[in-house]
Image (cartoon, rainbow, N blue to C red; front, side, top):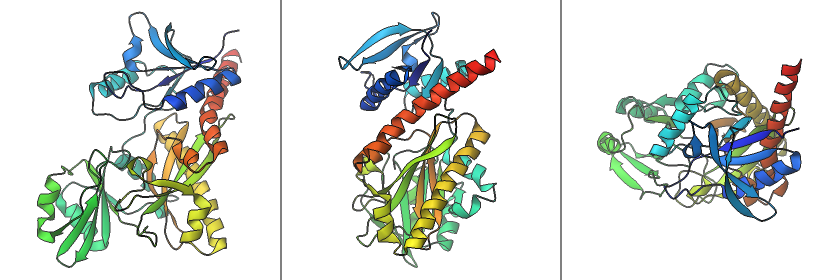
Length: 369
């Protein structure tokens, strides 16, 4: 009997065909073999549509070598492709459209603004959403600054902390601006008169492309910002489950905690203890945030179609309220390896494989019924 086959869909990072998560793919292929799942990696550039074949990348755990082989289309596709400004990404969009009839474990999520609006319509989620607006004019930013001491401007399609700005009131007539450019580099903090804000933001092309969000006070005593990354995944029974939650502390002068931007991962319990002294309140935070993560994941799947994992960026305010800052449909696993949680790291890699097997067997039994 033939094995179920899972294709991991990704994108090359450059024209030399460099891949981003090679160690992750090697581990998933190895673990897949142990589970009886045949796993290979491919990009849209590797697809020969006329022959209905894929020039797949295969890894042999015994030799530690990658090879190419022409393969038929897999039974299931695990889409790990992240947004790029490249022709490769346009090729991905064409692939998704042309092969939409294939079995994807996870469909693309919408942009940050659309996801926020979708969740805001549900009474259960409203208390956990920071005040957020789409920037249609500089007036939207000014209105938020009238309400809050600080606001964040975020690209609706940004990832990894790219292009995020934090604007805070220095006094009644000036603002301090900090943030990261589109290359993730920390920009030099600036103090500008309030009257110059519109001309400054014009250089960032924020209209229709950015959202503005209330700035939640998340600075630790050392001045660094912090938040939490929660990974929620489908398990081998087709059910959503929290794989783990890790604290993240930003680099010096950074307005974000992203690891790619110089942040560091730390244990959730350790960070919560520093932030909220009351043990009973900390336990409630852990319980409430886990329930929120599962509820959000279930609801977004109902709205947008198949999903198998999501990363939620969470903020906890001093009162213990959990706030959902962002939802990431293509999460990395490195937060777990950074804090030395080998078990959570392994589970984070295995769960999509176990879920793929469940989907395969579930569909096979449904057809035979």
